[in-house]
Image (cartoon, rainbow, N blue to C red; front, side, top):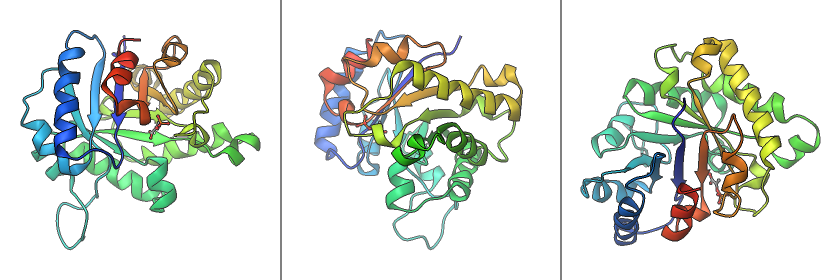
Length: 247
Ligand code: PEP
């Protein structure tokens, strides 16, 4: 049985005070949930959130660099994230791929470094609208999954979470439907099975992401291959996020 994992990606939202206020409330409201709950906050809030001594909510970052330390102005290392209490880190989000031109090779280096530092990567994959229309969805996600996981060992793969996020569904109000998302996620699991064997692939959690809300979460969580959600906009308000976690 895979434990469902619902993670909030706050992107570039909330100052420290706002972050602390929401996560304190969230931690109380979801204390009894059987779901693993993660908040991926901006770097600036992570120390303060960690200092709350949270019971249920785990912390994640939204990006990191692969080097240990050095002259990389503006970057943050895996060990720095570990040091401020992160357990997870989102890698390869489509906004990183599109706006900051991150490619699969760079994302793979980050995945390997995160695992080495004992962080659990949430590796994002997903197709553009043009790729979907051209019938390339599975080719794209299989390639991103294969390249993103290159060099990961069989011992490490269970720590990886994959998030299938069709780019056209992120922040647009458009969603994939449950059946379609389930089918794409099944092909991601098959890819992991080819790389690591089907027994290990069955243990890897794969989320859906893209305009998930309290009103549509059941459609996704009712699918056999979908193990949770990566949630952007609807993770910013405690009522909405609690509604998703208590699907
Ligand atoms: C995301 O940014 O990962 C995301 C899924 O955003 P939203 O839920 O707002 O579509």
